[in-house]
Length: 333
Ligand SMILES: Cc1cc2nc3c(=O)[nH]c(=O)nc-3n(C[C@H](O)[C@H](O)[C@H](O)COP(=O)(O)O)c2cc1C
Image (cartoon, rainbow, N blue to C red; front, side, top):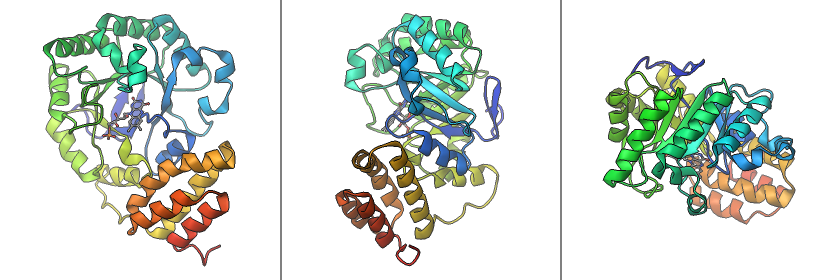
C-alpha cells in the first residue's frame, strides 16, 4: 500500500482510499449526492453506452450530465469501438465529468452478446486499442474497470494479465478490479487474494479492489492484508449512504457512530423519494424508488413489514404515509 490514507487517481487525490462504484440503475445523481453528503469523496455515474453518448442530443439530457455541485464525479463508458469510446470520453469531459472509467466488467448476457463489457476480457488487443484511443483523447484521470478474467481457464488468466500489463504501460491511472470472473457474475465470494497478486506484481500501479464491501471495520484488515491502494463500495451503499460516514470514521480513527435511528432513516428515505419524483412521473418514480426501498428496509427492525407495505404503495401519498407509519413520522407531519 503506497499511502493507506489517500487514493491517487492520476491528478486527482482523494482524502480517503474509497469511492462509490458505478451501479447501473442506481448510481444516479441522488445516490451520488447522498454518498457525498455522508463522506464519500468521489462517485461514478451509471455506466453509459459510448455509442449513445457520442450523440449530442443524448448528452443534452440532464440525467446524463453531472450536477454542478458534485465534483469530482466520474463517467463510466462501455463500448467496443475505440474511436467511438474516444469521442464519448471527450464529450463527457466537455459536459463536466472529471474522470473517465472504461467498463470491461459487465457480465449481463445482452452486453456480452454484443461484445461489450466483460466480453472484451477475452480480447486484449481490442481493450488496449480502446485504452490507447481514450488516453489520447482525454487528459483527465482514466480508470479501467475489469474482473479477474472471463473465467478461471488458463487462457482467461493469460488474457487478464496481458490486459493489466499493457493498460498500465499505456498510462492508465488506476485499475478497479472486481474479484470475480465474468462467468461467476455475482456468485461466490470475491477473491481478494487474486487482487493482492495484481498489486504484488505491479506495486507502483494504483490497484483498487471491488467485491463484498459491506462491513466498514473489515475493510481496514482487507487493505492491510492485500496491500491494495483502495476499494469501491457498490451494493453496500444502496439504501445505506451511512456506510460512507462509518468508513470515514474508521479511516480517520474515530469511533463508528451507532446506526441511524428511524427518524434519520425516514428523513433520508423521504428526501430520496421526493428527489426521484422530481425526475420521473409518479408511477415510474414509485417503481424506481422500490429498488431502493428493499435496501433501506434492511436497516429497519421490521424489514419484512417495510418491504410489504411499501411494495404495495401505488401513489405518492401511499408511499409517504407508509414511510411515516413505519418510521414513526406520523407526529412530525
Ligand atoms: C445492480 C448492479 C449494477 C452494477 N452496475 C455496474 C456498472 O454499471 N458498472 C460497473 O463497473 N460495475 C457495476 N456493478 C458492479 C459493482 O460496481 C461492483 O463491482 C460489484 O457489485 C462488486 O462489489 P460489491 O460486492 O461490493 O457489490 C454493478 C453491480 C450491481 C449489483
